[in-house]
Length: 199
Image (tube, rainbow, N blue to C red; front, side, top):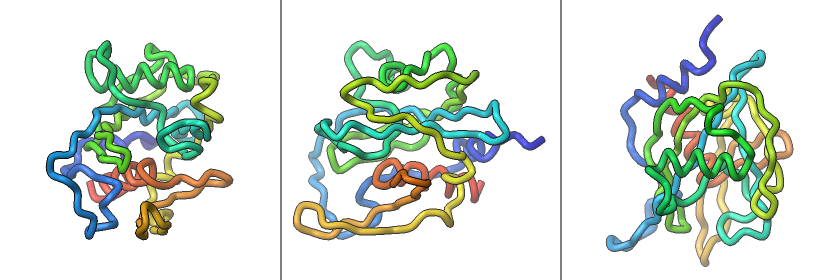
C-alpha cells in the first residue's frame, strides 16, 4: 500500500519560497521596517485509518486575531519555548489536547506572513495514535478533521475576494463540507499541495 504521507514528505523536500497573505495582491505596499512576531502552527496528520486525516480547529469568535476562522492549532512563540517547533507542539497540546509525546515531527514548511503581523512556521507532524481532541475553552470552538487528499489537490482551491481595510483583497479557499477554509490556512495548504504535486 502506498504511504499516504509520501506527498507530504515530497513537499517538505521540494524547493520553495515563503508565502504571505499578500501573494494574490501584488499591489500591496508593505513597510520595509515592519516587525513580524514569530509563531508556530502544527499541521497534524493521522494515518491509522483507511485514509490520512488532517486536524484543524475552528477558532473562537471572541478571539482578537482571526476570530471564527478555520486554523491549525498553534500560536506565537513564547519566551519559554525552546524553538518554533516547541511552540507549535505546546499550542497543539493546549488547544486540542494532542500530547506532544504522540507526535512525530516530519519537518517544517516555509514561513507565512499574515496580515496580522505574524511570521508563521508550519510544523508538519504525524500523529502516532488516535486521540480524543479536547478543544481549549475560550480559544477553540471545534476540532475536526478533513481528508489529507482533499487539501493536497490543487484543483479543489479557488480564489475569492472581500473588502478589507477599504480595498479588495484576494485569498485562497478550499472548503470542506460545512467548513470554509480560507486565508492563511488555505494559503499554507495550497503551498503544500503545489509542492507535493511538482516534487
